[in-house]
Image 1: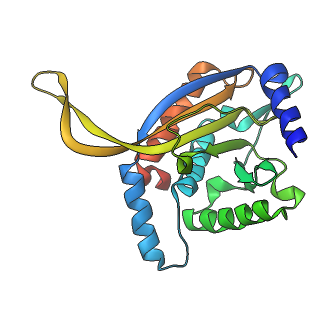
Image 2: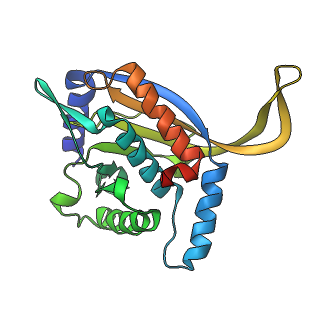
Length: 227
């Protein structure tokens, strides 16, 4: 598996795909509060994680910016009608990316249950080809490792991979409307940094920025997922 990973990623980064990177950060407070509420309401039937929510937020952003849900096919761009999210899972033999298919049309509990099942199969080495071959966008989340932020290499032929770091506390910064100056308050918020890697052949910089704006909105404002 390591040889396959090395070949595909070397080809992606050094030969085929002209990468560019956009960096942003999100307040995780509202998202984390919603996840806690849903898990209490689920009464043990499911346990939604931040990663599950990220999958849904990525799917929404891809639906709103279909250029990001596309791939370079020789001399043309192919745009996909569904958002199938490849999620990086570490296994004893290397990284593999099981797919949450039709993520844009699925609820958080459904995504969470399937993601856990796929991750278990990935670690046991029992994934079937249709469960990890394909995908229209990828997510790599190192939040559980405590990494604050990183960049990831696009998984060809996709045009976007999102790299997510861990949630870190920081003092809230607010704008004093009277003075026009920013001030540091006594309250703390949880902040997550992310990096979006795009294929410049498919997604221009301004379009990539739109995608980041939509992802940030979906991440910070859970009600936007209902729209």
